[in-house]
Image (cartoon, rainbow, N blue to C red; front, side, top):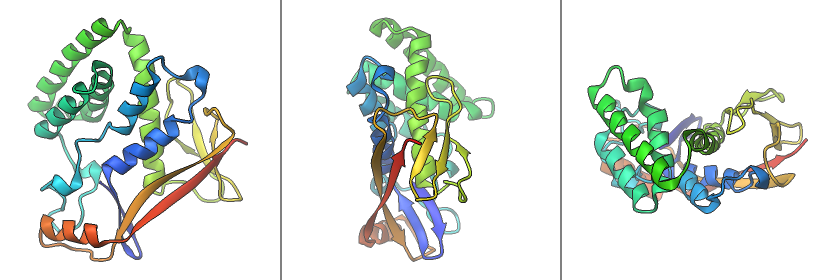
Length: 242
């Protein structure tokens, strides 16, 4: 889950909700730049965090009893196996993109964790087999994956309230074209991306969040009960081409 500390308490956005926001961004991508397997690409983007289901997890709190932000979590073999199985049950194409994303997430732990090293070696073998089966080159697979990674990065910027004030730019990611994309909030509150990668000139995206006023929890069950009881609000952004 994505955890933001605010004056009112913990702002919580689930991993799956963040994935839905990423897919909303991808759905607006320029038509001429879309991969051939577009529906499967959208599903991979929407579901790249589908195995991270907060209400079924028992690892939701820090040692101090606060909600555990996603970037505090290290490699979890069971979670990764589950995510891989979920994606493979849909298609090898979705499994390929999901496997590449796990490689992106855990590569930094490879040198310090032998479990990560063996897992990523296994994923590399699977990726080679799936590319061969699907007749997709490594270059093309990377180009498609970079779209997933871009939408993931952009969604995280929004979910983490990292849009800069006073019309200052913040870098999103390079994306499939390996350009530098930057986000800026305009004077009227709308957001823009430079260069503009989308098909339409303006659109809205949204994500659900919950505000939990209790700052510390005794256990996971208490946190889950508070999460379910919290009111649900929508964060909405309008993106527009300059």
